[in-house]
Image (cartoon, rainbow, N blue to C red; front, top):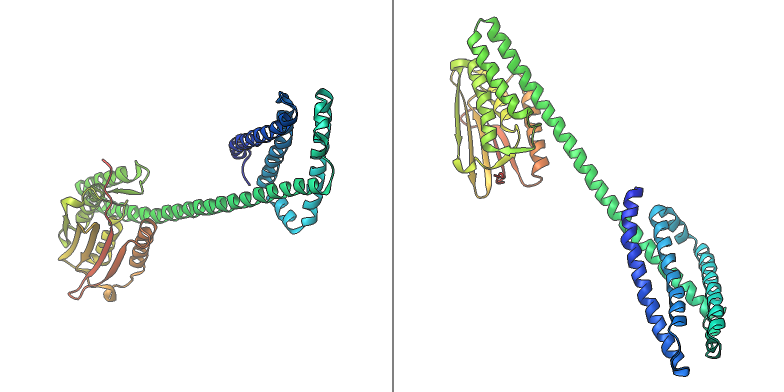
Length: 369
């Protein structure tokens, strides 16, 4: 149901439309009546013709506004009337009779003021006969059907918009839930690494790790996690993360990061790369005693961003558990599906030469300056 505020905004333009239509029809009727009157009484006044036209059409303008307000505020009334035509016929007859009675009273007063109107048959215009009642009833039915049809169409459009808004809200809530799955996982691993460094007496490495963690949190949390960020900003987060991991793994981890300069201003979902690289380290490099390599490449080609992350680990079949690996990849693909429905490519799998690779292709979007 529409709020009272929204209904009041919608009523104002409708009022002026109805008033304008009534004025035009009243003026047209007045001109026709006056032409008929002066054909018998040249020099007759315009006033009775204008009064008759106004009473005739402003009545129906008021009825139209009333029908519209009822149809918008209580849609079920229109449904009941659609299922029970007898109700509408009774209403139409009552309104037609009331209107004709009002017109008769008005015309009687006009005849008292301008007696010549009686001689040209003004009373016959509003006589209570079947033809006149039928015309009045038909006009009411047309107005009612029009208001009901338009109201139902507007209601359907509003339901469609509300459904779309609800889907957007649910989608955004789902995205926030996915992001919240990633951050605690990353923070837990990093804090655990800092604890280990402190226990081993590596104070300098612990301080550096905290510094990098602070930079990551400042870039991701201070801005309340924007949905998309430029590649350059995402790379800054990744570099801080990799610096933390290199402190943890020392010589066991070699990092190769290659970024096309033409891709730096492209947009991608915030915090997209870090979980993928974390998976490569956790499920790939961490399984090796030494010589672990993680290669990350980002390039712009044919209007798309191409992203690949690969490691030289043992592959899925040699991992004791790939549960966390699968959850991370599913979360990544869910985020891509949210931002680029049917416009992204996502592939992950083992390499023939050993190791694991994740490839992503998304539309290139230029970041605003």
